[in-house]
Length: 198
Picture (cartoon, rainbow, N blue to C red):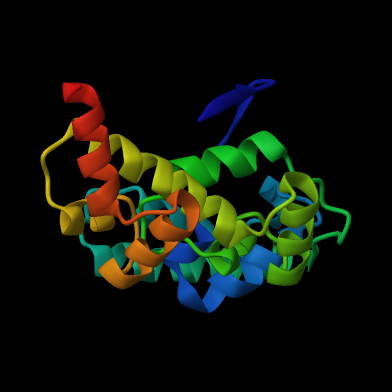
């Protein structure tokens, strides 16, 4: 809550992914005005917000139900409009997102596009233009860098390194690694250890 000229306002942030029914729509649309003034609020909305923030709303099912009802009442008041196709993409934000999520099997171009409120095609076109390579190749390079460090500095198995680095299976990992390094992960580790003992 924040004081505003003798009054107050409540800020409510809801991750659109929390509610699948609203999620896809909220990733592609934004409120024309993200503020609901006191005169626009219904008694039902105020009651639901009080329930949402009360101790009575203590289970995931109750929270999801309250949030769904709040969004249903807010949707017409927010007047959702399509995101502009000219939405500015912040390179630093994209890099941070990819780096933080690189080892997750859930990260895909589609998921990243949704995260930034873009179509997959627009995101991929922007990504290729900004990084001179596709999203998947860039992601694999980050994962392969992690794998190289683990191969050099740890004794964990190749299979563990594969999954820790974010690859879905050992075959994909071996193929990507060999393509980038010109040798298998096993050979790479052996060469590194031989060079360090010489």
